[in-house]
Length: 192
Image (cartoon, rainbow, N blue to C red):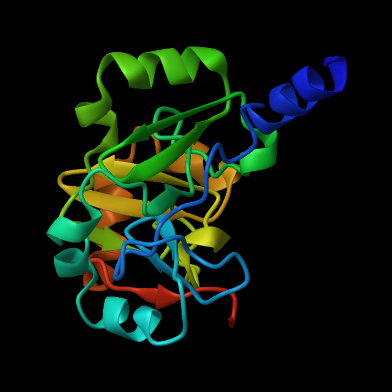
């Protein structure tokens, strides 16, 4: 009995996925070793090859499909309160909302998110994958250190040093990467 209790606690630890994500195309369980696509700061896994290509054609449309409503299909790669990149195994809490799984750097961030999920889960219609401070192109969301929202645009930032420079001078830095601002697009992750 003690072994069963211990195994259950390990399975429910904050850094562990409580359940597998679902394929955003078919709605069934995603294959852990299958293709991965990132979109708007989240990663998506698929049940089979082919679903990823379908998703990449129209990710926003796929995420509105009725067959996936009420299912967790994506994992947001950042703590939505601190905006810092986070690994699931280092998380101090987890919440699910709007088809996404969110991880948190602190229990306080999770509590803040849980009080106003809609606010913290909101994603601007435009983004830039060019660090506004260093002008470094960020290959995919997984490579960003954090993000900052400013005037309806989500700016992905390469590192904490650039975060400090960006704060308080957002308008100045945003101007320098204005040409990189676009509607989010699907990105094949990690060469899978």
